[in-house]
Length: 250
Image (cartoon, rainbow, N blue to C red; front, side):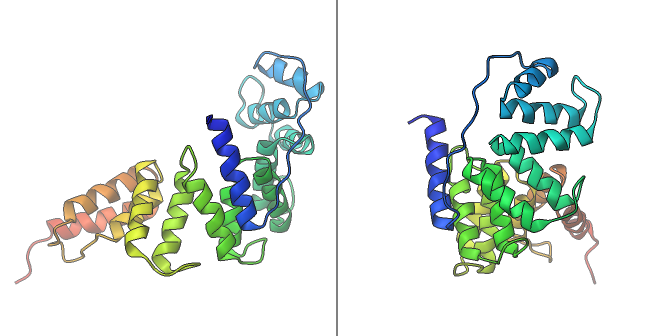
């Protein structure tokens, strides 16, 4: 089975479990154009929705064109209207942040659902977060778990989804608490670059007395989390280091 088919199957399964429904996006074919700003613009004008998205990214980053976030937002809207899942996902993020459009979590949820149906794994994860937190959608931990589980078990593994699934196993949200399962999921996420999951994994090992057998492993995990940009990992690393080097109390 090809990678594309595996991704398609897990998204369809996740949507069915989460009750999101399934629809196939119709993409408008367009003549080949080189992957340049000019080529993306030409293909976009000819009806290639994904080329509109790629051009939006160029304007957002200033890659080959002058940075223009207003144009980037307009092109994301055009891409999404044309059936491009990535365009819908980025457009949803603009509604979440309130950039260029008034903040509207309900509209963001609709767009993430559309992108998820279009097989955007990242959008499915963001949709899961909205179900988990009850932001923009009615809270539904079962639907959140279904989306996270599919993304975590997909090929390639989605580290962020594994981390959220680990959090839910740790707290007992949507399923009975399972510390061993939580650690397994946090480790998978940490091993695949999810810094926050490294912090959560380390917290399961942390011994504030500084004499536990796992202190070196804990410190290494906090260090990895901190290097990956997780502020919680940095603060815990400082605490762990100060505890290990503190003078013994008399």
